[in-house]
Length: 134
Image 1 (tube, rainbow, N blue to C red):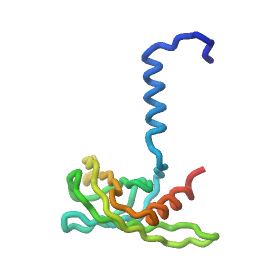
Image 2: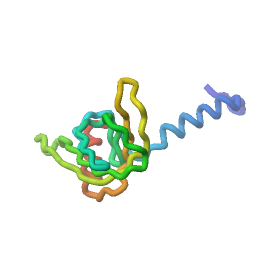
Image 3: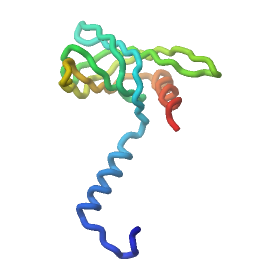
């Protein structure tokens, strides 16, 4: 507990500020869920699953290297509960790969930013994500 006028060492203040910034950095929630995703890039068609997703982007694993800043087409298939029934919604948009990482077990993890997505598909992803939030 802090006592009034008690000084916190500079290093501890910086760490606390860093932690707060990290927590507040994302405005849109991201959830760790596997969703079928189809990615078309440079003439290749990849079918994989997401590792996490938000209404702004996704993270997934592919077998072939795709460099950052490559424009891609995306199709997500997500089950959304609607009045107690599961309904499958497809979202199509374009995106750009913002990060490509070598995976130790082979292949590559890619971070995708949805750069051209209309409001309705973005809202569909938000509805999906919100099903899993407290």
